[in-house]
Each structure stands twice: as C-alpha cells, then as structure tokens.
Amino acid sequence: MADGMLKVCLAGLELANPTVLASGVLGYSAEVFQRVEASGAGAVVTKSVGVAAREGYMNPTVCQVRCGLVNAMGLPNPGIDVFVEEVARAKALLSVPVIVSVYGFRTSEYAYAAVRAASAGADAVELNVSCPHVEGTGSEVGQDEGLLAEVVREVKRIVRKPVFVKLSPNVADIASVAEAAVAAGADGLTVANTLKALAIDVETGIPVLGNRRGGLSGPAVKPVVLRCVYDVYERVNVPIVGCGGVTSWRDAVEYFLAGASAVQVGTAVATRGLSVFAEITRGVAAYLRRKGYGGLAQVVGLSHRR
Ligand code: RRO
Image (cartoon, rainbow, N blue to C red):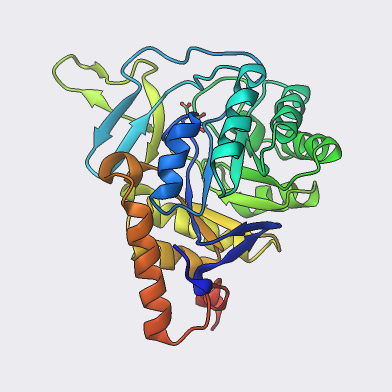
C-alpha cells in the first residue's frame, strides 16, 4: 500500500505501512510470505526457529474460544540449519522486510540461530523470550531479567542487524523487563506474546489442547496488551511493535496512540484472512487524513499527553 503517510522506520527497517505478520501464524514458507506481502503487510515475521528441529506438541494444538484462540503448538520448526534456505528464498521473493523469530534453550542457542538467520539475509531478528508453555525457553528467559539481558547482549555482540525482543505479558512489571532488554541493547520491542490460558472440554472433562496449557491471543487480550504497550512506552526509548488482538484499524490506532510504531497481526489473519492487512492500512490512512495528521509518527504515543 503506497501511501507516504503510513511509512515507518523501525530501528532502521523501512516499512511502507505499519502492519506486520506476527510470528507463528502462517509458518515458514517463502511462498506464503509472498501472499502476505501481496495482501499488503509491511513486513513479515517467521515462526520461531531454534538450533534443533522440533515436532511440537500433540494435537489439538489450537482451539477457538469466545474472543480468541488458545494455542500450544510447542515450537514446531525445522531447525535453523534447514530453515536458512527458506530465509534466502523469502529474501529473493519479497521486497518487504523479513524478520526471523528465534528461540533457544541456552544463550548460545539464541546466538547461533540469530547469527545464522542474519547471514542468510534476514533483515532483523526477533528474540522469542516469551513463549508461555515450553519449558526451558521463551518466557522462562523473558521472566528473568538477568538471563534476558545476557541473551540480548550476546545476540547483539555477534549480529549486525536490528534485534527485536518479544516480551511476555505474563510478568508483574513488563516495563521493568523492557528496560532490562533495552539496557542490554535491544533495538526494538515487540509487546507482547500470548497470555497463559486454558480451555476445558466439558464432555470429556479434560483440557482441550494436547499440551493442556496454552496461550491466549485475539480480541480478548487487546486491552491487556494495550496497557503493556502504554507502560513500556513511558520507560524506554526504542520503537515498540504492538502485538495482541489487532483485528481492525481502530485497534491499530489505539496501539499507536499508546506508543506503538507498528502492529503485528496474528489471530485476525487466522480467523479473518489475509485481507485484514489492507483493511487496517486503509482505515489507518483514512483516520490520519480525517484528523489532519501528516503522518503516523504524529500519533505515536499521543495518548500519554495530559
Ligand atoms: O509454538 C508455540 O506454541 C507458541 C510460541 Br513459540 C509462542 O511464542 N507463543 C505461543 O502462543 N505459542
């Protein structure tokens, strides 16, 4: 969507518009990302990739609840050494930035996955320190400020591309975790991952998901994550990417007003389809015009004024 008002620069990444495919929703394939780009997304984030391949959890891995989805995929991925070829193919096919999400069970694994992704052409990496239901990684890193800082510092030491850190909402004080990530060198923050959740089948009497516990996404989480963005914006000075229940242009504008410079869209892509990117972008552009703003940057964080 070529509309100069919607351009955004995220830690050096140039996006034609502020909508980004969130990690995890559409997997890894370069061809699928090409369709996402054609639908109007300003950038794409891959599913999280680690050092070793993983099958993920038993089915069911996703279930629909009233206002969103509860998932526990369990980090299924082919491993970074295989995935680098797909990153290179995606780079050959796409002109929007390709951000590779990486995770690890130790600092050195985050670093290895990140450096391999960056050398394969990824425009940036997003560190997943917030998956809520895989032992030994994800939110276990993101809930421990010391460990989080160590991971970010090590990745920053060896990767010459922008490093985004995807924070967990399942913490007492997300702004303090954000400060720790930024002090360690994070170039941008994605706020946030899914909220710890559960769904139970009343007929069988047991949890629906194979892993039992999962993470909630979709409209239900938007007010919670919006508050996270609002809190983080007051304490750090790097770009924030809002991620949580964005379904319409209004949701996106709320995130911008709270302090996000861009938004990731995940569950709405799964539940409504790829047209959501262009719908949001059109709506945001119309809002900016109607309100007389010259560009998106003018509304970022505006709700903090008193
Ligand atoms: O794969 C997953 O189960 C998963 C991941 Br990596 C994540 O970061 N957040 C989530 O809700 N699910």
